[in-house]
Length: 393
Image (cartoon, rainbow, N blue to C red):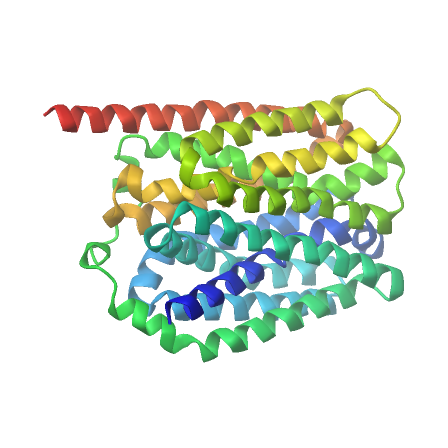
């Protein structure tokens, strides 16, 4: 049962990743079809992320009342329906309408699954599970690239929607396994929800939220704009740019597999430090004043490698840093903080790209990388000091 449930969770993480890279891959063509400015992709992501913020903040209550299995199943179904809706859109406002259920589905499953894995599995599994999220994000650009070449972007969304529906059916059939998990849940997870106000009073939480916000702002900005960046700064064809957009996700996926191998030896904090250093190297590659595309494409792979350990390590360390009884509430708020970054920062860069230049993408990434490093280091120092004080008393 334990192994079968773990396989289901791996499948659910693939489901999490599948939709995330679709919009960025298809947007250069979708923009032309809808005849809207390039920055309008940010409007869609704002609506999606707004929904995820709401459902992330409600995830603690939803998970405790319904259980992780039901929350996961309903969330995947919502995203499947929304993606099919995307494929039927013949006007930009319809795209925005379908972005609402997409966002609501994404936030609840993210918080519920991440907390479950942080509590019940080692950092190795956390990294490998997020590696499977990367499998989903890698598959989507190739599906979209194939669809753009042989049919249309609408068909790309349709294919991914069908995959999500298949995963939903598998999750429905596995609900009995999740009921066992709920029955065996420890009493330390059954406390009242902390709430945003009480969570922010815990030392280190505000700094962690800001650091997580910065990380997800950088990651989401790359995810959305890498195709457009390659088209506009390197003159690539839209279909090639869509397939090359997968390079970032390949970097994340490979990096998370490698992180899982070494996570037990290095620990969460060292993995985060290594990851941020690698991100910096990737940004430098993109900034190099060379005409060949090799360094730019390598840069996005390296940034992906650097991003790989950061997200899972932050999530996995939450129960240890702030207590298992607080983890569901804090991880839900972390997800909301992450999606605030995903909501506002990619569209903000869209405005910069529209009115100044899309070439400023690496500079934009530098700012958020530095903010992430400072805030996460502050979090660990505060938590370490607090533990030392408790131990001394």
